[in-house]
Length: 295
Ligand code: G1P
Image: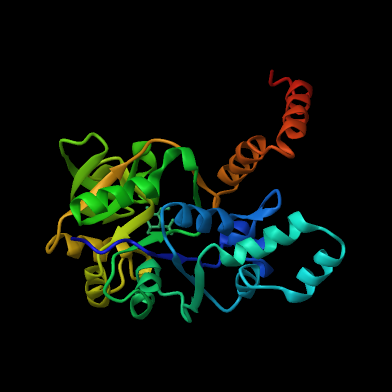
């Protein structure tokens, strides 16, 4: 019987150079979708998939993320005194949804290295990894589906999505074989950011992983790869020699908020879905579209 997946690791230590100058002083994970930072959506997804313990890997210029998930007694007292109970509940609930911990990656040595920093915290348990700038819409059910696959098969699972073959060089790429379940593939090979002409497929590794703790042994053995960084994809490739790994395929519902265009799409789509500002925003959008001759 496999141990339950209770822990999630969110690597969020990068500079966010694509969002400069904003990200010079504010972490890109704090970009707002109206009034909630991107990192809130990632944490909420982990909680919805059953995680009760979340470790965020951050770095020295990202202290505000810690403040966001911490209690703020002076503000709580002020909101209480003003009778602003909804706002009070919101800011307290953020801190109570899970046990949220932080450690810092002192040097930017790569995603594999950042995940390796979670070893002492995670221990001998399976754990999920959610990249800090990919929002997955809940309708896609990616992480929950991966947890189901882990519970059934007991092996590591990685989220995979087909991309335009020309774009595969921006991602980890998986070679796979089919299984008797349409959603699940058997991963047979992995390569980080291959040139499109040598890529084994157009199946890209998206920002969700579910690992058995054996991955830590492989990370420790992994040297610098593409870009001189310790790549999680390389550690996963060596894990394949020891354990089966499944690919959980999905086709939509991912917003890469580290890219400006995709961030804007996330803002538009997720705002339209809101009960409070959604209806007014729909009218604003329709207005702009008419004015711009888009409809
Ligand atoms: C990272 C991973 C890559 C994965 C991608 C998903 O790359 O190294 O394998 O496909 O995230 O977004 P990055 O986007 O950090 O360059």
